[in-house]
Image 1 (cartoon, rainbow, N blue to C red):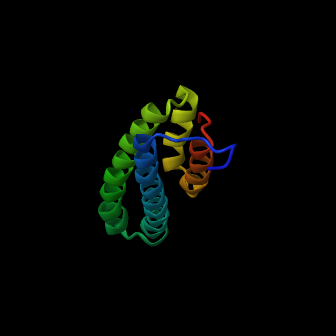
Image 2: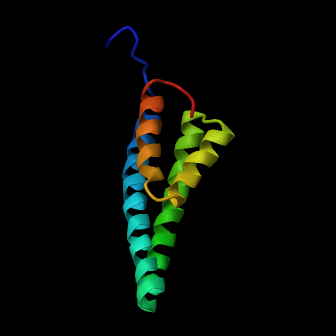
Length: 111
């Protein structure tokens, strides 16, 4: 192990792995929801949001719980936790949050 490497506890690494998957899934699901909203409001296809909205809501709830799990295990600041939670509701922000969180957690930094 290099001298500047930080030993990250296994429970934090496991939570980080779950977070990375959840961030990608929620990011893609949010993009699909944007398409569904375009179909709904641009082309009057009510079924798109009616179908995908609840699915995205369920996926986001899972993301929320996974973020809380990682934030407690990695001892994040409340502001950092809130920002990562909010990244799940802004299109493409969860992709950026995933990269930032991964870098900081592996470096032993607080989010």
